Image (cartoon, rainbow, N blue to C red):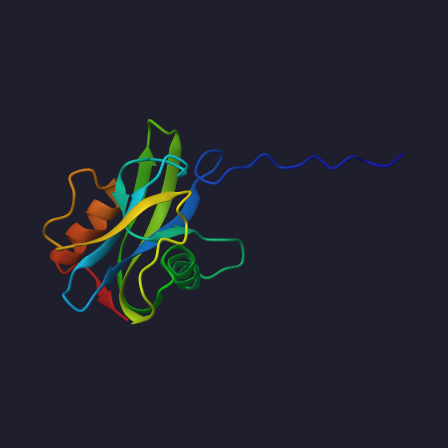
Length: 153
């Protein structure tokens, strides 16, 4: 008799703590790129966040962030700094993520919204004038940058 294999119903951030992160990307004017989450985003639709996403099994975090930025914005980036991680606990969405945060400049490419199904808008902001409706993990990352709490890589 053949044993039936059950499909895992695991969902990062919901059934277990998710690992992800994001990147504060600077342009030549020292502005940072934020994305407005669309109605099909995993969580916090209508709020602004830094580009980033989930770390896949076997993937190094820094490589995941480079991949996610490329997938979302079309940009190749040069990661030059590491900010403190953020425990992003979203009680309303019943989610918990450990978010690694990086600092980067643009290596090449033009900003494009490559995920319009998840992202309504991409926009540059002064580091001291981010929107009020910015997600907690991005607010904390920006605050840590402004307070010079990061490691140069």
